Length: 226
Length: 226
Image (cartoon, rainbow over all chains, first blue to last red; front, side):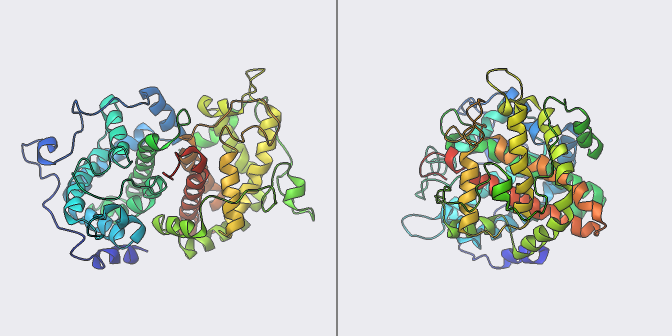
């Protein structure tokens, strides 16, 4: 399975994945300034329609504990200088899955939009770090809602000023939990931590990504049913 | 974590969980006759609004392969005579989580409805077996839609003729993937299969349960956005 997943990278056409500098290079500039469209903590982000209490209930249901938070933090040190390699794998998976690359299609050319893919990729790299050291506070919660909106008809394409398909269909959001966290595992294992710790970090990632995709789903769900 | 999860069972009040005979006892009667409200394959079940092609795309996105199907099948032999013990753990988790037991509340008494819990439990036991040897055909797909409807305002409470809260909120459906599959692992490990096979069976279960909860979500999602 590992080999098959890594093979995705090989199959990526150059027109689809444009290599970029690391999304977060540790310079003094904040990610908000370095990464266009990354608005975490900014005033433009609306207040989430769910509360911190709702979040606590969801975390409880997901068996998401303080231990998971610690293992996510631990994963940050390991993943921080591997984000480009991880993104190569994730973008390779998207590029080799027509149902997914569809969402990056330029509606004028009918082809994947390299600039769009590149712009999203920078924020996606930052998302790896943000997932690893999330604070689960109101600011974080608001940004989950913002990310959700950016997948729907309400906000997709606006951040990057692109002409693409109007929405990512809901069903692929929770589904992506699996490829994202499955392909992450070899990267978690690269820095000589124990197999048991790799398992715990990956399990924490599965919970966190599923939690986030559930929060992102809010604008897709009928009124009063979330 | 294992100990904490099993401790859920201990904390279950008798008023909440009513022990029942095994949901599927291998007698000549079909589950449809033995289990009230279990209508898999029956004419009353509507055609799903998603297609087999949609299902294939979702399976691909979830990295759900033929190997996962094989490991799910393998899990059936292991789980078949443990379904009551598994349900004790799952019901223990629900009973100890106020946000979840709420969905079994009798709106007259304000208390969890023992008859309702018991009726759902029988179908839940059958669901374990159905998840392990699913065929992923149109009949299976239709029943996923039916299960989804039974969680929403459209159909909840009707199958069991109960007076309870009108819906299960969407967000708990995908979230339950984690407790269901985490607590399953010790049961998968009980029959002396290798640790590697336990991992593969559990990973297949995670994918299958997440796949199902995504399909169950259809009636919650706004028109044209699923």
